Amino acid sequence: MLTTFDKALLNELQKDFPVTEHPFAVIAERLASDEKTVLDHLQALRTNGYLRHVGAFFDSPALGYGGTLIALRVAPAQLAAVASMVNRYNGVTHNYEREGEYNLWFTLLTPSPEEKQAVLEAVGSLPGVERMLDLVAERTYKIRVQFNLK
Image (cartoon, rainbow, N blue to C red; front, side, top):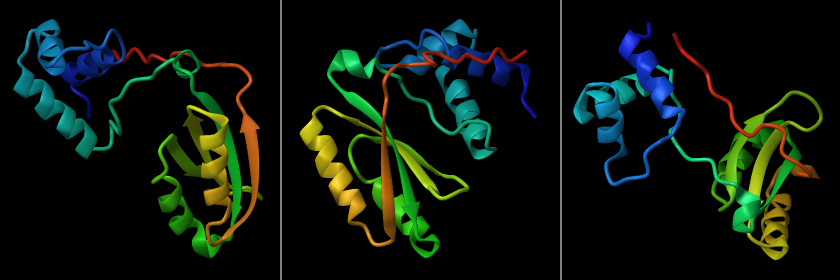
């Protein structure tokens, strides 16, 4: 169960994350706490499945990157192996299994069309990959999601 402190901490992580050498010390100060307590709570939140990842979102087009969503049809026996291999490519932010004909989806950000093509050719040649759809991002629909935990 989340404590009042856990909820306040999770709320802080979602807004104005400090870009500094010791960001969790800054967050601790905002919460009238200390860095060790914040880090201990974050570890407990992760261990207990409340938190998977703490990271930044960047405006990738402004940085010169192009984004795409890739749908793969993978033979079920090779699904786990293909998912593991896909995660090894630079630019893959995450992948997930889905029901239906295309059963493995992933997002890819690359700095050039050539790099994108190289990754897609390599993924397409993995054992078990039967078909691929490249669903290029045309516009952004979700810029920021913030959950206010009370």
